[in-house]
Amino acid sequence: MVRFLRNAFFLKLGFLLVSTGWPDPALAQLVREAAPAQQTTTQRDNSKSPSGKKRLSQEFQLTGDASWVDTGIDVQAGEHVVITATGKLRYSDAKQDNSPDGLARGFRDLLRVLPYNDAGRGALIGRIGDKDVAQPFLVGAHCDQVAPIAGRLALGINQEGQDTGTGTYVVRLEVYAPEDGKPPAVAKQVSSMPGIDNALFAKIPRRVNDKDGHPGDMVNFLILGSQSAMEQVFKAAGWVKVDADVKDAVLHGLIESISKESYLNMPMSQLYLFGRPQDCGWAHAEPLYVAKSRNHLRIWKAPFRVNGEALWVGAATHDIGLERDQRNNGITHKIDPDIDLERDYVEKTLASTGLVTEISHFLPDNPLKEAKTATGGNFHSNGQVLVLKIAEAETKS
Image 1 (cartoon, rainbow, N blue to C red):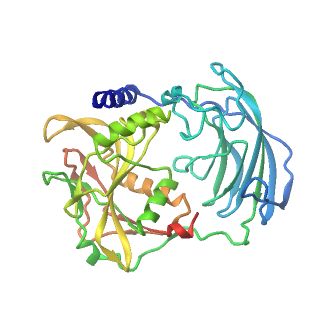
Image 2 (image 1 turned 180 degrees about the vertical axis):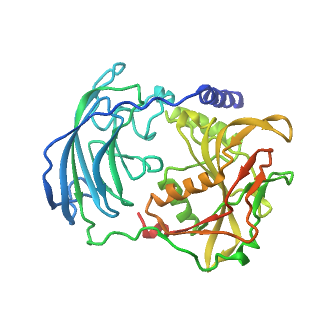
Image 3 (image 1 turned 180 degrees about the horizontal axis):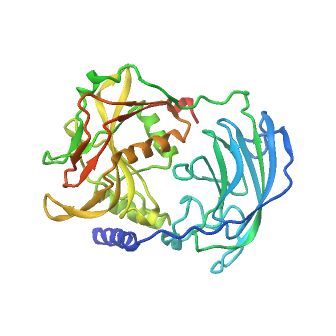
């Protein structure tokens, strides 16, 4: 049984390692039709309409070679985006047409890099905000999506750039004002937060270390909020909780294979802060390229609170390739030496969920601006630490 599990995992890992490039984005075609404006509606269960005032209504056609299409519509935080789609696509290797709900997932999907991994090929999907950080959502034949932040709305088809279908989806899009007439509070940029000061940073190690005590990555972000709120904001932003060790990786690799989903939970090594390994790790990566390149971070719960709130201390880096481990001449991941880019990426992805209430940047005394990782790689920073305050899970859906 153990051999079977191990072989299943390394077969999966082999698929991950052989991938060497990203698919070219497909050209998108969008036909905009007459656009009636201003009226009223929203939806919870496909039968109830929103009570807010309808701001606009437009119809689009997405052809089968569409990747992501800019609708030209900017939505505001709290607005309801109600989308209804009809039509069919047909893929050359498919046995039947598919609707906007997409095809049922199959084992071949393990070899596909889909924009939205939880839906089948050909599903209609959407995105609000910055294309580099916004988390796609499933539209299908119908959805009522509340915009978590203000941003540009894009529609797309859940397919690889070179794997396009033939056919057309007709999409009706309606935007409604927030039901209570008030947009939700969005993340505020603040110059300071109570309790975030040099006295606090005197209790927080500036760097993490490996099991032998070699100093490594820089602590570059803090989160204030409960564990449930912290986990919710990462999941909402599309981050995946990472396996703690190889044993978990083997089991999950097999389970994910059986469930026909790409395995994103590749384990990361244990590093130490406050005298213990990370409490959890999170990763952002495309399914097949997770072994080669991924945004990832580790988080530790501080053994003290800040103004009565739990404090999570994190170190985020971006794997961009492989290099020699100077401790043992082995192979290890190479990180982007400009680690401030990864700190900013964490900020943008989490803020895009609408679950962050306050954002600040703190420059401690004697800031760390240049150093080496535990494996010998160089990194540099402006020394600032990102601080995010998270809304409690029960107050945001």
